[in-house]
Image (cartoon, rainbow, N blue to C red):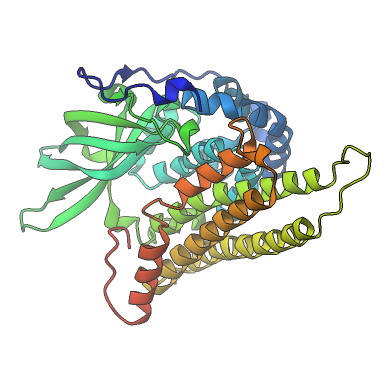
Length: 414
């Protein structure tokens, strides 16, 4: 971390207002888009690994995704992955999502996190009314957006839409966004509280310089504030229509429950970080010592084998979650038990990844604790990922246990 990351974050005047860098020109050409495949995206993001790795520390210092690396990532075509075919995208699902995000996570979990949410937000836009999709996708080949549900915004119904106000935290990727996603609560005339997901243009909000953290610093997850902004009905979708799976959608990939997709978005960067550190740990064990021979380290070898097996188990859990979410949603069979299990599996997978990184740090020399070393950064990042409300182990396992015992869920996205 840089000294700048620890400066006074609560000055008397309050946090500074930041200006997002949301003017992008690095779209694929029509000819490039015609030739785009999942395999090509995977190959391209894999080829970007040296750049992403080289820029990881800079992203952490700047507290946002490095601009050179982000522009290079956009040119891979990754953000077309879940854009509908009718809009020139690939219309892919969660299996492909894992394949394109994992190579990024191996180099930088924060960068992978920002990319993962940007990919998900193409899927998310497809949940909105057709008029909203047309408004956004007519102007941009894909949307880069950021948003949050914590704390929830407040909405009041008026003619033609809602008046919304919010002060959201944790808006990952906001510094590269053209749009904002906001979850807000409103009360029906009958007194029932409901949640909505709204889309606002980036110039409708203020971005506050608040992201001073010891993990996931490179995500730029600053606060956003907006007050009494009118949002038309066509830029709003009710959470009850998507959190359990939008079964009205004709495209199977877009019928996946919001909560299940969110679990995968959070868990895949952590899995990538664990896999990447295992590769680097193995490389260190193969390095010759001062006498020119590879040192004999039986405990480290055993540790390498153990974390490799644990990583395989974590990957199987996460990939199984993706397969079930896709296949069951396509059939319209994803029950509350399935959703709770998928969330619990992703949570356990992330917790396993955290344990792997702790083990690697314990088995390594003190050099891995240098602030320039990727291992300590990965450990700090995944420690923070594991605390996310969606996959926090205690609450996610309790929710699944409650479901197994026929008790109501306490999670607002269940």
